[in-house]
Length: 90
Image (cartoon, rainbow, N blue to C red):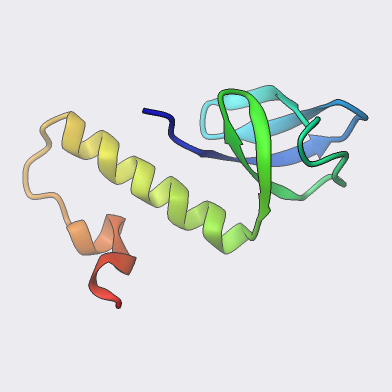
């Protein structure tokens, strides 16, 4: 399974950007979307940027990833509405 990870551009380059992710700083391949200015939020897969996203979408994705981590760690009494607020919306 491939999971998208939000990343914020710190320093852009032609083919690679230095970005901040939930796992720290990473070099992200920008070949699919082109150079992006510092501050831009990206959705990345396996070290490559695939899409430009909003800051709000980045927060929601990180929140859902936190929820998945909690579930995989067998944490008790997980507040599903906190981690996945969109699930109840149709």
